[in-house]
Length: 68
Image (cartoon, rainbow, N blue to C red):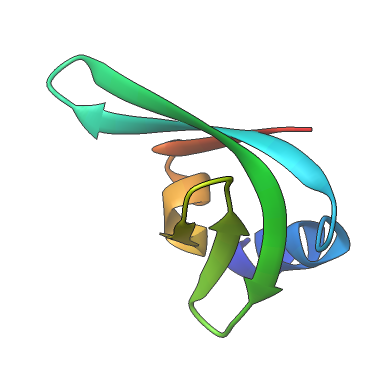
């Protein structure tokens, strides 16, 4: 399952996406940017202001939702 998620995110490398992140306690954050790199356990998103990193497991458990 994680390898499938990793493959899908690798295909998005260099493309602009929107990411919804559940940060807990009924709060969420939205980021828009470009998938910068994919690594063994994490992937990075370059926004206008900084670089965010997320784990593939976060996508698996729906803490991070990707919208392209």
